[in-house]
Length: 272
Image 1 (cartoon, one colour):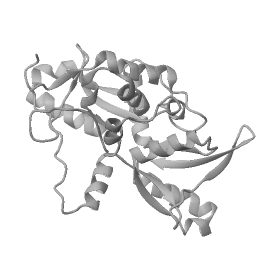
Image 2: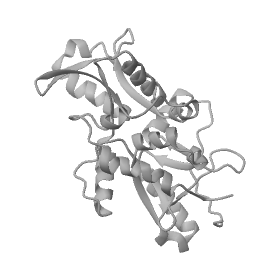
Image 3: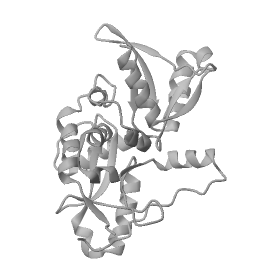
């Protein structure tokens, strides 16, 4: 049973995508990478189904399409939020001020990250002019930007969906956790820096001699998706996207009678 998996070469691809490819379009985070992502395989879709996203719909279930001018050209856009609170704030603080009559008919609707990608793929097939934008949590964007700058990378703004991964410095191996009974262990990619920090601190207490060899890596969701779709490394299948605490609480609220998800635990084992 291993507490680490080596994915350095594979996830190096994801890292380079962030450094060279995350230009975005206007204020639409990460959209530049979205175009490069093919239709997810069943296994990838299954991973995405575990992560909720939130958008605004009318009583008929139709998405709210917002229009704005970009370089004198009108752009139609539908927003999907990583945070339910962000979606609600957008409705309360912006739409209700701009169009209170319309806003009064809208609601925040949950979907899965897999649903979002399917919508984007169908839009591309139909040459839909509407842009479907995934909006990150600004606090986590700020954390990602700060961490990258602290590590010597000059970044003014993280233009994607940040993920935080506890790892070992020396051999590019990643901390793993058990998610179910048995010996299977998985690599958690957290949507919140705080979750990654908590797991890493737990590991440091259990194996203090490894503390100096650990760090948190920042990668982009779209780069990870590209690796999941294209890599031949079997270890890539060990990646699991771990929702934010807010999203976990939302999922639990939908099924109060079900047992809550196990708390991530880094049970250390000797390296092989």
